[in-house]
Amino acid sequence: MPAAELIPLLPRLRVLARSSPEDKLTLVSLLKKQGEVVAVTGDGTNDAPALKESDVGLAMGIAGTEVAKEAADIIILDDNFSSIVKSVLWGRCVYENIRKFLVFQLSVNLVAMISAVVGSLYGGVAPLNVLQLLWVNMIMDTLAALALATEEPYIELLDDKPHGRHEALISGTM
Image (cartoon, rainbow, N blue to C red):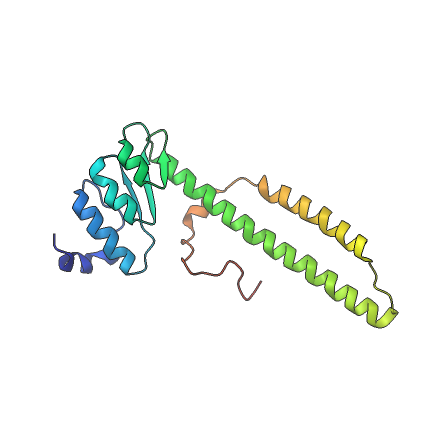
């Protein structure tokens, strides 16, 4: 199918199965030109160009050829598509945990800074000295990191829209 005929179909396209390697490469190129983030799965030598062109290339580990594995970003070791969903779920969980950690850090450091400035202005002496602030930060950072690192992903994360390529990790409301 020529590229001109594919362009009107792109907004409705979600999954493409049983396509030729040429069609995969054409679709990947068209979608990337429109600013979309594109993932491609493949297992054969002929899938290598589309795997390389995509943002995320996924090759099958058992049935995949060495050429496909070399071209891919991720190798699915068990050749099971549910592993892709699990990977997306964990990736979104890590992303959300990083955001939560940044919000926590911004809050703690803002409060520490305000209390140091206000305490110095009104009392002449900072309420916490440098060592105390470092100790508080070290304890807070460690506990927050441990809490977020052990948080299991929840299935509702898959309902969220993907984050944009140029979306800021820290928003203005944070």
